[in-house]
Image 1: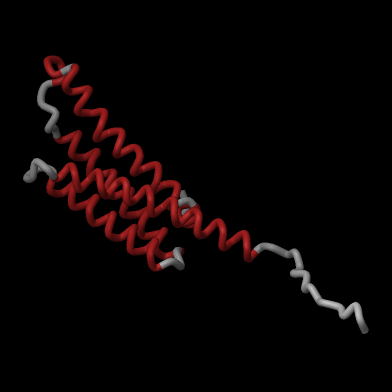
Image 2: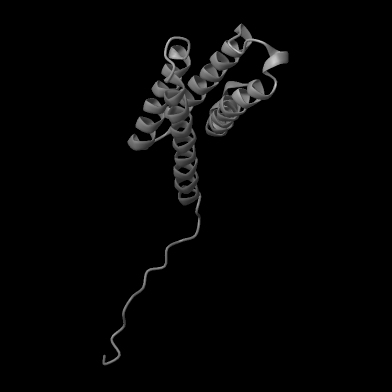
Length: 143
């Protein structure tokens, strides 16, 4: 996959990665609850590697999205959300409530990427518009 493709689709990659992480974080505990006798310990290496891969995907998506974003608000939302997300992933082993950081970060990343898509879509559609602006002139009816 070329870097230019990743750069162009970084917001969509970020949204899909964050949504997949939310599904993983919400569905996995339910699956372990229902299949607790057959699956064993859910605190396995594979689960942590999956969490770390979500953190890498989020970091790549945010880095490309921040580079192309012109909005300071979008950049701040993405960076702060990434800090929450990666912090939640890294602290999940030691803190029981770190999952809250992870969920807040995921929701923030989805929101930030959606805002960035909206901002870049509206600004690019205004730039590509070739329709000339019509200037309205007032004419004096009495003259």
